[in-house]
Image (cartoon, rainbow, N blue to C red):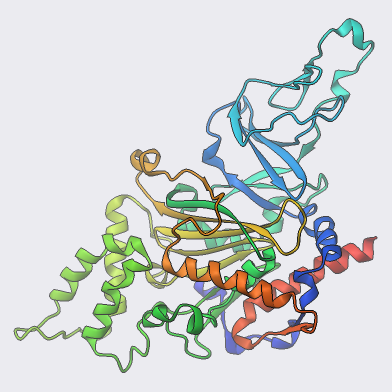
Length: 449
């Protein structure tokens, strides 16, 4: 079964199973933000980075969600482990930097020392400590696992296995892209936004806003009613609309070709495919220079063939990907806070986190562009994380800048107390799917309380 076959057209979706009226207080209420912390952020798997950030034994990084801090470290056995970032003696923070390398962790308060496996291996002045069972005083461990090259962490010590959380459909659907072999290239940025984290998730879960916010994308994204395909896998999902020239049936072949030429302004990696694409296009011109395609071939299939050949020549195994995955961006969402557009050879990820202060009107987002590169070039071209300290100073590409501006405008409107609900439409099915999952986790937490 291909990933495309596991998706269904929007016409087959049972819309009655989703919420279409969304209370606005879930974006602005401090009380609900606290409830979210307990029900979602302290209970669910979430992405904390990339596995290749920690290649060697002793490499570590910190991960913070709300006011909770964790350490992720590569052990001598090559295994990644996660620990609460606090000494078991008096609770002092062990690591206050973003990342580092050490053979052991020594608390600067009283010099208790822990190995990368979390075991307490030494205390200062044992004669002053008295009897102590070191085996009972190791660091507090939390679940850590990896998938698709990402490191996942769960603050809940009793969490279900990551593979169960992700579902077999998500794992099978993403595996052929070779995400674990991709490298951040060009953009890896984190910035504080003046909006709730769910505003970010909502914005990247639907294409309806393209009409108003990204009109230039209408040249290559065909927003025809009923065109979208959806896959729903537990709390997660994927949606895809054909990556095709608007109204391709009525556009001339030359107009379709020009639209592909314009793609690098929005999708930079298309640039490396264009030379072969142009050769293939020219091979289909008659003596007068007019385009004449053999039956079954189009501008779209030509782009797909060129993409497959270019990526294969680079060394990327795309045999597990269908032709439409050579051209179409699929929008994947992993609950609670990970969105990714992905096509063969490239991906852009958006993650939104609640603000460390707990303020529901603020969040952090992290935007990263990934590209598949031969292993010899990955270190050379790897983008380092940029933390933006001056709001609005980072030069996002056009579509992302448009979203950056729009999301913060929306939060201003959401604060109006006279507006009690949002009204979703069918084109925003993925937004409704997200809020169905949000409702379920919040209700489960209330039922368990």
